Image (cartoon, rainbow, N blue to C red; front, top):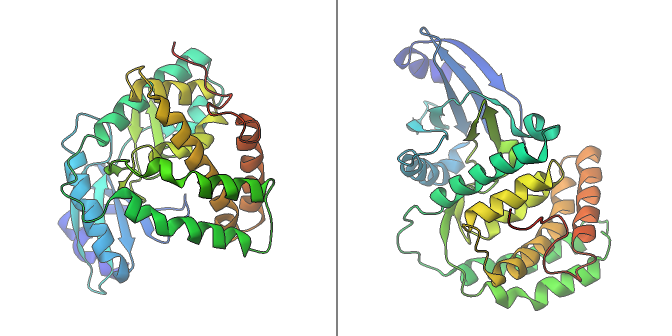
Length: 299
């Protein structure tokens, strides 16, 4: 902790609490100053400097939006060349816990707010991109397939999912690139009273905005009305036909990706991967449907 001495002095920090939630390799702490104000300190390895710098610049833009989310405060290098980022602290209960036993109307209300917030995040100017989304994404396809085929295990309907994934890659050819949160689901949302807060932009990136919505599975297992409302509000209740086909394509990617990812962490995550893949196949009736069964329509 000696490396953050300057930060402690600069911000009059009197207490430091570690944050152990999540899978990030970064070290995260809650900093509490002499006036009991809280901020979040994230420390990343030196090789993450450029990535974190880009994220911080975008967080500065996010901070200008009229939404309840973490705000950019400070960024730089520690004495050991590790990268630090300080962002604001948001009060609230874990979104998953808060909505687990909520009625459908409450879940729909917060889902609608989540969609409005996401729409604003995606509205940020990302400037001119050197490559199209198609060019950025095409290398990912075979890399994902190679990982699942060589991980030493197999998922349900693996060959059929891979075939669908390969044959439908063309549907994202003309998708735009937007600034995306990267992990937009209830696990990265906080609820306090009637307010929804968005946290953890760790996986933020420039990507297809529809790709952002493939995390729906984590919301649906909590409450399908939350995810239904999120999509409805994101599109102002006018969902384009192409969206469902593209979401199905990204669902195939998610099913292919989750098991190799989970095997890095152990039995619990592997079991969750198999469970989630099974649920996604159920929602799409083994890829026969374009609109998943959890979607409840326009309310």
